[in-house]
Length: 259
Ligand SMILES: Cc1cc2nc3c(=O)[nH]c(=O)nc-3n(C[C@H](O)[C@H](O)[C@H](O)COP(=O)(O)OP(=O)(O)OC[C@H]3O[C@@H](n4cnc5c(N)ncnc54)[C@H](O)[C@@H]3O)c2cc1C
Image (cartoon, rainbow, N blue to C red):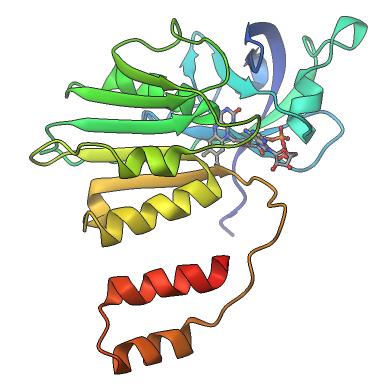
């Protein structure tokens, strides 16, 4: 019988380094990782299970070399991995054993792409850094981060501050970007609601084929008020009967959900 369970590796935390107030570098390694193999896809990620937990959280492989796997972990207000990574003193995470799952990647830039745009928040910074290191087309980056991380990522980078702790305004940033001419690739990751808005923008306003972009929700902000569930059916039928365009109908639908 073929097992469908993802391959898992036991690893040990070798080092921990505070890169900035909100970003902690964990270097993991040990004999358990000996058979670990990178996919080579520059935004590849692994699942991380910390001691005493069974749920995993996903982290980008910042690098894998010499038997050492580097993960750069955002520490925010609360969270399973956040609280573990913040431990200090005798309970420091160095020497602790964690479980890593096999890597997977998503970045798939077409061979004829002449430019690349990368947009993301702090959770996406490790992936944006690794992608920038591996591609050879002109690359523009928009990074929304709460700390000064200008030495983390070089090149054509626009540094933005989040509007408030644990929030993001990346969707409106993308809506105002001047799009380069010709074929290219757009990669973006961050808070899920922002990513949903951008997918709509790329499909409806930019009319990009799905092969031209990759937009991933890396984490879910807890909404203060859950959006109301609205059935699109009646809005769609009424809009069609009134001769409105698809865009107008979807805009009405969004308004009905937000209102
Ligand atoms: C493919 C992929 C790659 C990723 N790569 C990285 C990476 O390299 N580095 C990295 O740090 N994260 C990365 N993430 C995001 C990370 O998995 C989530 O942020 C995760 O929820 C953090 O786990 P936690 O245990 O700290 O918090 P959780 O226990 O999952 O969440 C606790 C609370 O914190 C909130 N929260 C979660 N993440 C954030 C955040 N980033 N900012 C503010 N509030 C938050 C949640 O809404 C929740 O209320 C990646 C996610 C994916 C899907």
